[in-house]
Length: 197
Image 1: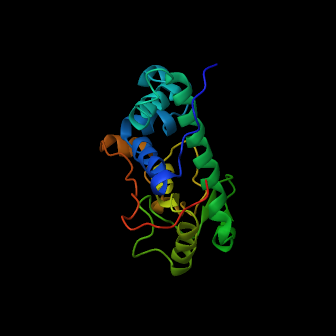
Image 2: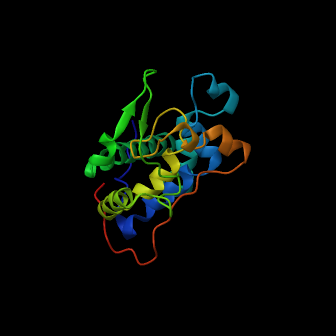
Image 3: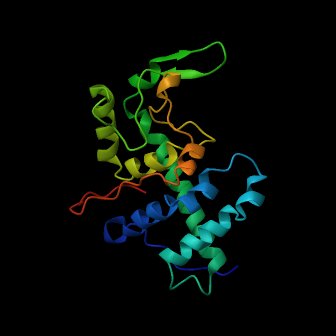
């Protein structure tokens, strides 16, 4: 199996990670990577997840892609999985808002707060906004991943994103109907903080 040198994800203030987040936030990539609900969707969309990872790898690592397309695709897929695993850990920082739930007889759980996919807004409770700020301070990629994963149909995002039925986050099918990809938060130009990967 061919090998490639380690990808320098942290170089240049994590520039490759920010580019990766921008690529996975594109509608054509997002639908395949996060929008599928069953195996039959592969036939409908015509692409597999590894094919999308290879396409992203061609954009991010054009110097390695021609000779090592499969390995580059696997590394991209691995980095996406690592980012998701890291993302799932962070909402546990505050803890308290997540315990304020009501379990319905149908097994659904409703949280008292709702953060839209674009992040906190003027209606966000100050306690939840504070939790969001703590998470963002510790891991700058959280808002970008949240904007991508908060509209994922096959899983409830780990952050405080659900609420009463009238406050539910739009599904991917609604986003697709409007032909809008989830917005991805880009890093501030003056970002100096480094985040653990």
